[in-house]
Image (cartoon, rainbow, N blue to C red):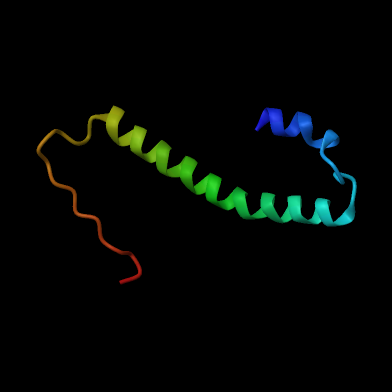
Length: 66
């Protein structure tokens, strides 16, 4: 991501309105997904390191919308 951010000004047509619009749309599409993934990873680490579950225990996951 850092390399892409550094190379952005050197990409062809990076200063055009269409390129800026597409890059903004991509950013808006990726941000909610990234925050969701980060939340899931944090939850997983919290469960692993809080030692609230032991090997062999079963976890029942249910759909809150159901």
